[in-house]
Length: 342
Ligand code: NAD
Ligand code: UDP
Image 1: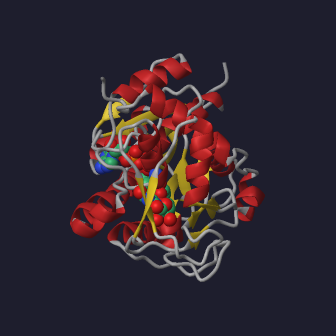
Image 2: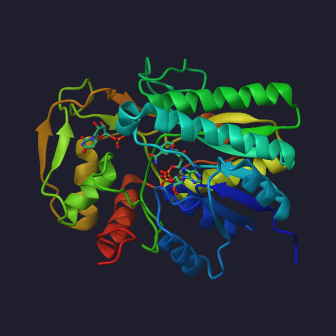
């Protein structure tokens, strides 16, 4: 039997981590999970076991625990880490900035300390298109100026800078920074998907909850943007495509290629109303909406130029908006309360 490289997924029980777990198993890796379940459910582990047909190795704990992470890296001879763990709600980060600085920056520093000691020298990091702030034009290329409009975005920017300093100090460290655009969709099995706590902040889970009857209508935040139909335009990317981008990033780094920072998007923008109509098609359910005032901090249009990822990683997104809606609907209709029973 050939040796399967072990990959540590911090935050691997979360939305993107769980889908990446499946993609890594399919690609011949041995992923293991570290998660404190602050924003996820242990039920996901049973689901992953069902999808992959094998036991899931998961350690409950925080990435901020240097000794724990170091012992995991050593015990499992981890070849590379994918660092998903962190908090991600923009509005909450404005209300509770220290919660975000402590977890997102503290987690990154602790992880790097543990990797340094173990040693483990290969890391893929979940960054975000939020590091572009309000982009001067679209599509966005990686060389655009970075800025931030909230503490969450600030933590992503600082994490990118911490990684740059560490690469500068340690030539052996190789990092893949993935700037995700708008991840949506679910695994086609309908067994795993996005399970937001409370009222969703993001468009797709909100639309899905309206379609399934959990919420009465969608608020469309503004219809007077300078976009074709006046509503906000984003680069929605299927979480399965995103998961495969992580596989490609790890394969590239483990082949010995240099560090990189790439956009992970489709290159295509869709408006809020396009998403609403695509979801109605996929679900065959109405999605009533009301136009509401613009949401503070929103930009009109944000989509990637994904050329660099294709060039460096040999990866590109293949799934359509219809696929994203179909797979979200399968997950939402089979699990109206997410991972909670009932
Ligand atoms: P998620 O909340 O579903 O997953 C994050 C996981 O990390 C959760 O399971 C949570 O319990 C865990 N976690 C949080 N703090 C931890 C800690 N200190 N120690 C161990 N585990 C911890 O979020 P997601 O959507 O899967 O996002 C994953 C990463 O991608 C995050 O870093 C997020 O900022 C980034 N990102 C997400 C999006 C998006 O729209 N979902 C977009 C851009 C970037
Ligand atoms: N949006 C909306 N109603 C909602 C949630 C989002 O109209 O309930 C809009 C939002 O204004 C933006 C788009 O949908 O134009 C995507 O928002 P999301 O929060 O999903 O992503 P982000 O703005 O962080 O890229």
